[in-house]
Length: 247
Ligand code: GLP
Image 1 (tube, protein in one colour):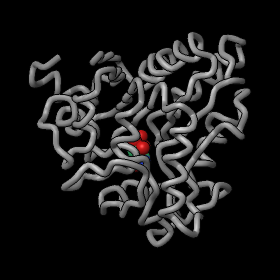
Image 2 (cartoon, rainbow, N blue to C red; image 1 turned 45 degrees about the vertical axis):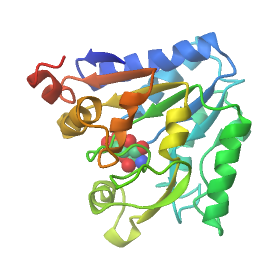
Image 3 (cartoon, rainbow, N blue to C red; image 1 turned 180 degrees about the horizontal axis):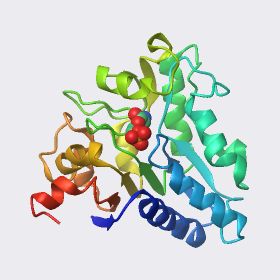
C-alpha cells in the first residue's frame, strides 16, 4: 500500500488526479471505476483542466460508477449520474455511451444489479477504482454490516449516511433511504484502488480501515487485502494515524 500524505484538499486533488492521469496516459482505453461525494470534486476539476490543456485524452476510456440512489433519475440534480455528468463527463471527451452508473429507476432492481455485474465483466474488469470513504468506513454504499456483500446489490442506507447526505436535499423525506451499489467483490476485483480522504471527519474511519482489524463492520478495512492500493489523504484525515505513530 502506498500512502501519499499531502497537506490539504488542493494537494490531495492534484495528487489523486495525477495517479489517475498516469493510468489514462499509459493505457488510453482504461476502464475507470469512478466515485461521487464531495471528496473527488477537486480531483475531477484537475482532470478537466489537464484535458483542456491538451494533456489528457479520454476518447477511448470507459467508466463504471460505484453506486446510485434508488428512486432518483439521472436528470435529478442529486443523482450520481447527474453528478458525474456535471463534474466530469460534460467537460471531457469521454464517450457518454461508455460511461455506466447503476439505474436508480429500474423496476426490477435485482435484475438491474445482475446486469451491472455483467457490464463490469464485459468491460474486462476495472483498471483503477476510485474510492471515497464514509465517516463510518463505508465504500460505495457498502455500509457496516455483519457480512461483506459480494456483488452489486440494493442497500438500506444507515441513519448516519442518510444524515450525512441530508445537507444536499431540501427536506429529510427527499433523502433517499436506499441505493444500488457495487459490492465488495466488485471493488476488490479492480486491478488498482485509489482511495481519497480529506478532513478530520475521516480520521477515525481511515485509521480503522488501514490499520484496524479487517471486518465488515468497517467495510474499507477489506482494502488491506488488496495488493495494489494507493491512498491520497490530507493531514487532517491522517491525523489519528500520525498520532498513533503509524506514519
Ligand atoms: C457517499 C458515497 C461514497 C462516498 C461517501 C463520502 O456515501 N456513496 O462513495 O465516498 O459518500 O462522501 P464525501 O466525499 O462527500 O465525504
